[in-house]
Image (cartoon, rainbow, N blue to C red; front, top):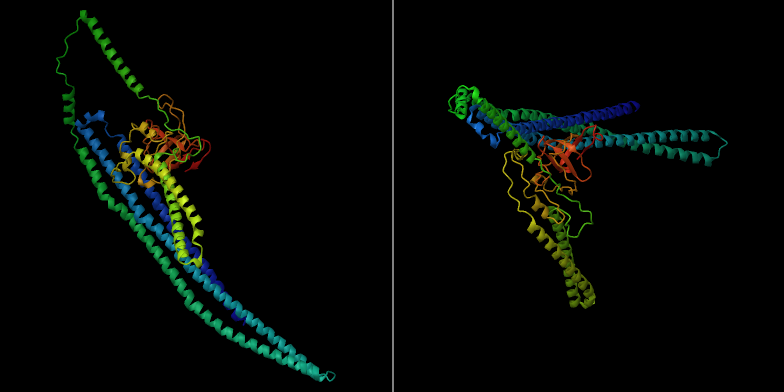
Length: 565
């Protein structure tokens, strides 16, 4: 029996060890899938950032309206064509990022959750079966110990009986009592033996089923799960390569377009254009006589004056660009008004609509109670023994009064809602774009000509931005009150860190700056508790954006390294 006990416990221990090893291995496999998913996600972000930088570079060097004369030269047209091809080239890298997100990242993320659930179920079944066989073994051991104990007690009772039976000084009553006790102990030992034998047979059956049916089935399921995971990884690696391969022909066309535009350059034609543009047709001047020296001085002074006037005009033009701008927002320092007039129009409309919906729900509840009480009263009228119909009247009157009050409340809020909707600007259709994230970056930022009207749309000068469908539920912080600042007259503020836009912001109002999702900017003034951060795109573009719309990374030298969203 001791040998059997040792072998059984060894098998149970080995099984437990195998479950531990399999659990570690399958968890490592899931971690590998998550690591690969993170790798593809970072590759996608690199493609997006690269495409954004290419688009910004192409946009930066696009010809301005004042440089339209450049188009008559073949080398300028070739460069402009290259810029356009670079824009298309950037679009293909956006396609890579989008395809990796949809075909690999989303698929593996969903599969990882399914894999975790499947693994958990299999190991739960295995642990449950293991606990069951261990419990059966403990019961078998208890039966065996009981049988052993009863046998020893029966032996001692038999020896005691034989001792008394051999002693002539012991009475017959004592001998008979000892004999009955020995017989009882022998019967108990026999019963324990039968019980132990029966449970031993049952345990052997359970053990055989456990090791030859249940556990092999669980291990086979785990094996199939692991093979499926490995196969899924291989398919993802293949898709990773195919995503790049699909855009290679289009990238090749972009490069061919750049080559063709470079080959279309005609130096002789361009030089002829220069000659035709600048030839004067005048005859060369004759020799300057000594008497005309004074006229030559006048001509020199005149040319100098012309040069000075040009430089002065440049100064005047540059000084015209320096205009002071006022921050258009004010804080609401009072308590929250009932009509939510302290909020921007869109936020105020949502608050009023939610309030009206709540009131309508309360009205409906009151009306349901009224209908129920009315039916109850009708029942009482038909069957007076069930109750007094007049007892319902006070409650009906109270409900009618509540309904009137709620309806008046609803009319009040509906009036405010109609006022807000009447003053809100009509939203235009969003522009079509080929890429979800980057087309807005190529368009011209909206002007601030309607800033005054926007401020008038709310009693305290608050406003609302028209957001894209991705962040239409994102509530902007209440705009704080700022002192006026002069972007041109003051020295350029140093950068204190960087930030990444996590939502698009159109920035129609004066003092704000439009950003696109994922765009990288420089931080020049951190959030002072009012919900706005001042950022800079380049030397000419800076402004405020909502702090909740960007992820800020301050330099360690600027009030400590802080990251917040």
